[in-house]
Image (cartoon, rainbow, N blue to C red; front, side, top):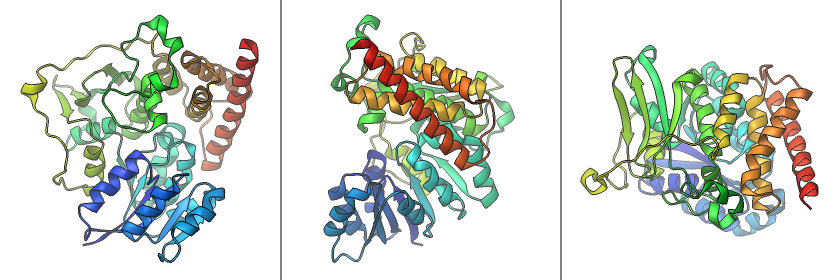
Length: 394
């Protein structure tokens, strides 16, 4: 039976890998909506190839270029946040949520309201609005399927298991491009240095987040929200080979690990085909060739984002929304060359401190509008603090 699918964030690495799997089974899927940012050439090319019903760019100033690129194709075109939401309201059996940042929140929520399967690669949805998102899925009988390699690994390890028997969950981290740099050298890391990931082929922002471990900090919070596991049972280890993606420990002392080559098509394919497990065009792990798998505890002085994630989980409420918003602003300023690599975490921490004095961070986020307002306020405050840092260092 042909399944209707929509992909939000189609031009990014997750979206392109999803389309690669769909391309291999052309009669199995019908593409409803594809969305992207400023890579109009890729978005239009994919929309034509897969015969999408509609192609949407997040940026309204890109609409003329998209319209021109798809002229005569029969593909509808649109732009802007409202257009994303309207695309999410189109009937589909399975939706990939891979828009980076808080912009992916609303389309994901709308997808769930139609009782669909939502493949979640947008970390920010669970970090900023985890309880709301999970409640929305339950209310509409929808299924959320994790697409982060770590959470997909945990999800698979828990199949058929009793959650009461889970003692701990360990998600692994490559350590990113700067994992072996001397601590005192980190402040000199350039944008190019932070983007040179040794294992994964990912977009710029997530690759930098990997180097700073903000990516892993978000994943710690995601683990708590998605699986309902208490923070003290969640841990992370540095695993340079990126072969073991997560481990689950049980009350009988067993430790189940999920292994696979560093290829996002593992997790995407599992979510795409769930509840079946189908063949995937990924490298098979050769343990004899690997010979050694390394693990070591992360240094929180090197990776302060992990400590901040613990604070966020302890606080709850709006802390996740502030944490994520401040992280995105800090990343923007690092990419722009306004702050050093090692100044991102202090900027996030300062924003959390400032916002805790202005609003009650412990209050529950009771609506998507509340989450988005908290996100907005945190971005404003983080931007002000970043500007102050620039002025002080000038």
